[in-house]
Amino acid sequence: MNILFIGNTKSTFVERDFKMLSKYHEVTQITPPKSKEKWPEYISRIKRSIQSSSLAFGWFAGWHTFPMVHYAKKYRKGSIVVVGGYDAVSFPKINYGAFSNLKERIPAKYVLKNADMVLPVSNYLMKEVMKHTGLKGDSIFPLPTGYDSEFWKPNGHKERLVLTVADARDLRRVKIKGLDTFVKSAKYVSDAQFIVIGVENEAKRYLENIASNNVEVIGYTPNRELLPYYQKAKVYVQLSISEGLPNTLCEAMLAGDIPVGTKRGGIPEVMGNLGFYVPYNNPIATAKAIKKALDMPYTLGLQARSRVASLFPQKRRDYLLQKVINVVALIKYSSLLHRISAKHGEGIKANIQRSYANPKEVTIDLNITTQ
Image 1 (spheres, rainbow, N blue to C red):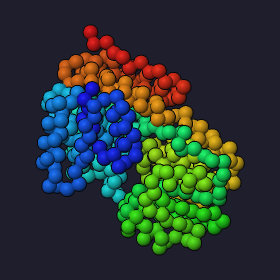
Image 2: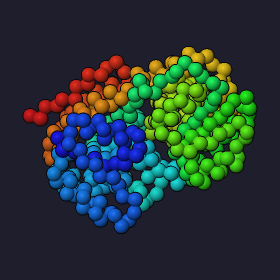
Image 3: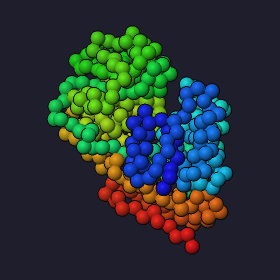
Image 4: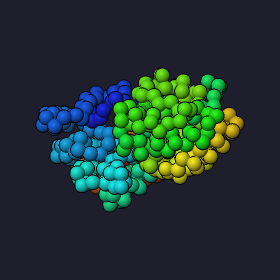
């Protein structure tokens, strides 16, 4: 099958899907442009590629996937859009989320309402998509990202180290990820070391200025260098105002870290009843939870690993994504779409959600009858 892939593979979770699809299909990748001057050629490339593709697949709903969905619809090709977080939420007070402003809401809503299938990475994002678009959910199927538990694994040694990882270059990202709360909480846990990884530029300068002596702020770190930090840390902290399905939290729990997090977005879908929940933007409550987590036995971290390994394996995402692609390629964009969605949509969704709820149930039947 020829697939047009829209997304920036510098993001680990986007790269994973691209590599998986490339194993089984002829995949043409187009990266969204960074400058306005390149947009006309970008749109032209999508138009040409759609015509010679069987299906279009894009990460995130926005201006960059708008032409993909538009031309897929025009030429009656299947289209799939993965919803990762920002593209489904609205936090107008901090101007975060595609639905918090008109400029981004217009393309996001168009993409989500016109794609043949929308794949939010969490149940939380599915509800947000339905809330902001008015969709009933027939074409929306939560499909979580997957993780390699053979790579992200503990090494048996934990230090009195508290860790958080986030891509942040400005103060807005600091607030979104709760990094200021993390750094402020460190002064109340003086006998532990705190490390923030992935912070650059203005964000790094700000956090270093407010940090106590037991805080270290580190810039971008590739995965192979990041793994030892996860393995050393006893506690991992996710203090975001919103998350789709937090990748770094999943990676850290696989490495045996005890989680502390806000009860926001998809964070509870990862943590479940393990670890400790704290209010957003509350350093004192966060420090108390971190102290409790540091005093917990190592076995709690192993339970955290077991939860993520069973709920979000990479193999399950690969398997279900292949099934979804086959369904969309079969349906394409025709009157058949409406008949099959109405007749079989809830059944498909139920099968996927059963797999999500029951980690052992991997053989999902997404086959449908078109007669």
